[in-house]
Length: 555
Image 1 (tube, rainbow, N blue to C red):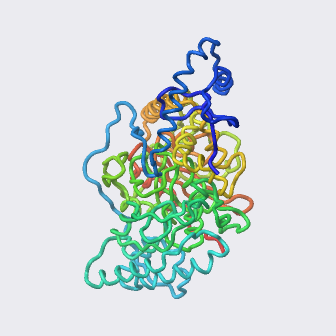
Image 2 (spheres, rainbow, N blue to C red):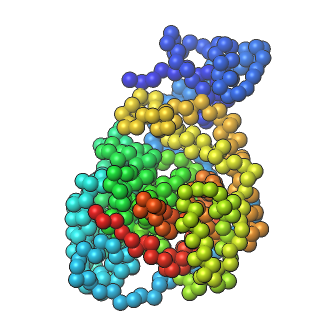
Image 3 (cartoon, helix red, strand yellow):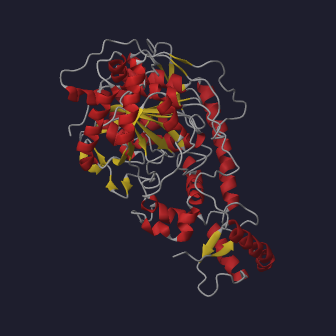
């Protein structure tokens, strides 16, 4: 049943809707000055009776425009004509060629116990395939079997793409036999968060209203991975419409504690990799959806710079904040996967051309690594493990430099930008009433958030974006003044997560210990825009000095 709403106030001609209330008598009835008075209190504004009366013609005309706009078909893949640009004033884009140098390969042999393959890295599995110690078909069947065996407990898979996976694996083997080698992902199985489209398979977005949806295209990330020789084995769960870990099939579980959720929204991607059901998976992040599940599941994740990876064929939640990245077992695995998926495709106009340069560091001596001093010194749950991380970095020779995040723009106060854009993305869902089909219906769930976002005035949305510009420029100044390209931050404490998702900076999250309940904790390495290579290299040096990423849950 469609919802009937009446406009109370909005900026004439704005592209965002203003406030609405029910109008049980006649939804087409002209607006009154009394209705405008009520609406203005929602916005925290006060107008005189004469001013309210003067607005009526504009507001009634605006409502007519909105009614006309709602008749235009605007599917989720139609982006606004306003594109977010994370570049601060005076920023110089990196130029020159890309370069990629993996770690020196050590001899990899097929284990006597094949079950050990479940926790081999992408690099190790790639070596086994390249040296023909195992075929892609054998490896694919191995991981398909693990998915089938363990998904009933973890609920991390929405759709097995078994037929596709077997055909891709056979192709990879045939190509290798013919002397065609596509690179380190050749024949490697993986999973894709089910907001990425793949022809011939459902793309459900984890939400009941879309559980039978099919999209007749391949997401750019899926296509690029196929070009690199990777084998798609499953569409992984996500919290409905990219929030949390609850989807239409239940709650995705944490392999370290199957009674708990795996966080979200890249819930299935992190759970599956953590449990050894896949060597890597693709996740997305808008406001923590790679960092959070990677933290609780003990995986390593890369959230690239905004504008690094094409979102063509991906569900849009927030056009100015959505980012796509890999979830893996190790930092270098993130580098291997990112090397295959970054760069423009001609379909996502926000993607910028910039080189990706990666090479492992022999040492951290002479490397200035910032640390968010106020965050590390605050009282938060995982402080002890994070302090040990700083000690390890010092032992590795890094020069630790106190670093302060900008404070003049409270990031949390402008994060409603995400909800407003999400409400526009799913405008039809709200107006049709089909949001009632969503599993979660609480105050903090999407249906209520979408409805509430309609009361955000267009002017306030624009003002928040202007404040965001100020935040971006101040963040650039902080990095420049500290003379650091890489800094570390607690995963959650100190506000870094929200701030950098708004500014678009890249992040590597990796395990750095366990809680007293024997659940993983994490630390994040941050870097300058488009400098994923530097962040990955420093993060790898730290990870190589620890063994937290080598710990695995027992299913």
